[in-house]
Image (cartoon, rainbow, N blue to C red; front, side):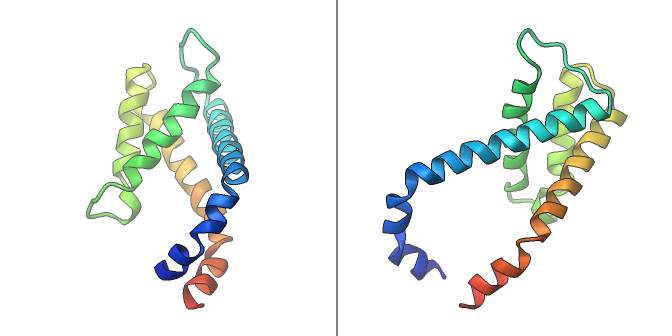
Length: 125
């Protein structure tokens, strides 16, 4: 699988502008969805700029915690604890913060489940 990626790296380089646009679009949609989850739970952050921008930076920060080497599957618990810690800095109580991070995790798992079949077919080929 890694050999194919290296052999076809020119395709990635050729399509980089479109891939970058897709990345920015997906990042924006995820940040906006996190914003709406927060609003649904009654979480309001007191910041001097539009609140949605907080989620543009919160989302990659917590997602990075999922990739740290830990004894759990996909950093389960680590990113959630990080989310509670970050929300506590903004004065959000732990119950709302835990609800937020678990809802966003479940939403991500459900969305990613649709790609399992495709991922398995790529691995097998």
